[in-house]
Length: 462
Image (cartoon, rainbow, N blue to C red):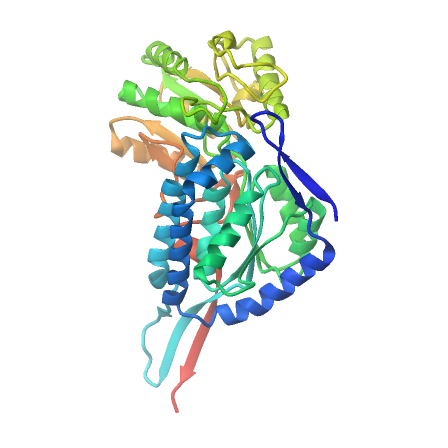
């Protein structure tokens, strides 16, 4: 058997080494999932909820340990990692469990004498979840818990950077008493992933990752008549109108730009500010950014950890340098962050002005603690720039005028439109993207639609 190693960005050490699944293991997992799912779908939603709530409880009891493991695996500061479990994971799992009974109930149609007619939502079968490393629990829970609640089996393929997350799921489901085979996980190579997607025993694919990865999933599906949820890249914009609460906008957009070292699909990567506020906004943004502490993420005082790997930091630095060569101005002297060091994952945050849309820094996903800020004259210019992107995951406006915000939201090409907040998933709302940010829906009642198929019952009484 071949193996892979997870290199910790903290100190470049090998933190985890695991075996890649072989052909026999994959075949056994697919066969077991097929059998287990048939039995699992016969359980009631209430029975499934009992088990899923036990899973949530297990995660909460082990949040500190899971948080430390996550810090070692991908570098987010330990002061934040447990909250991926105790806040985001818990909120999304609880909500999807709570709404399952109603969301999965029969759809009744108007009565016709002598007939009974309704539409039933049935599980699709086996759901193949491909999770990323940046928020491995937050992204995977969007599919795993509702898939199980809907009566499906799940096979999880974790990112090689965060393999322990899959093992924690497995332990939690085992502890909760989930029947064997309803949840499984496999460590796989890309070619093996493609082969599994082509297998007739996979009925739905939930993928979170890059645009290239999404294209590979779609290609693997080929002529198969199955669906896939694809949450892909982002270059999410924010617009600060002239009537915005400046202090609040600065505080939230700094956090939205630099939390998790900017490694978030819905993080803020470009900001447009009304010209009347531009100088004050930039000054405040720079001042607050300088308060970050870059360092070892195991230190509880660290607020900005290393990027996931050196190559990611080098890619972002390349975008910055290219922008500067083309006229951009960098406002942060990396020397004030003593841990910043070229050739390592430790990268200081950066703010660029005098940028424009001829620069990659304003059009291509950076996925790093870097943001470009532009001055705009009015709403029309801001909307045009926000829409000048191949991506459309989230966008935000900062204003006191909710009616105008709604008008702007109707014009901006995005899956989620925020007013006076950013970088947040509300489980009651559909999480989706447009353009190259993907397709499909997770969370909300609509999240159950893609994990089930409709079956119509048309019954004529004796």
